Length: 186
Image (cartoon, one colour):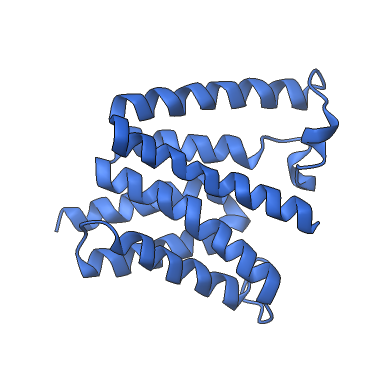
């Protein structure tokens, strides 16, 4: 399980390449990259779920609940795609960075040191790690202090409650971008 968790975490963090592509090459390149990867992931998930794609390597890196439904990777890319399409440059990049950094930080800290249960299988330690890392990520962007604090809290709530309602790889960047956009209108 530790090997599975480490590889999944490493893959999750590699998603930081998406906002970096936006920063270095612009919105169009990031959008084409996100859309291309999303289409590939949809195709791979359809083939996998229907039994036409059955590799041992892939199966041993899936969570139990992903065996018969789309993987978190598909929702991750959908969250990136929506963020790039809907939000401004900094809001989209920050939203995806929060997903790429704060979500795996929360998972690693929660699995390793999580002792106090919070809700939906989450721990106070993991949720605190998400909040702290989201604050740090958002502070790297030209947002106001209230926007950073409010958005970090909103993103943390999205991560906490997503387990019950929707894949957090989709909800985290969308909620983060929406809250940042809200603060941008102030």
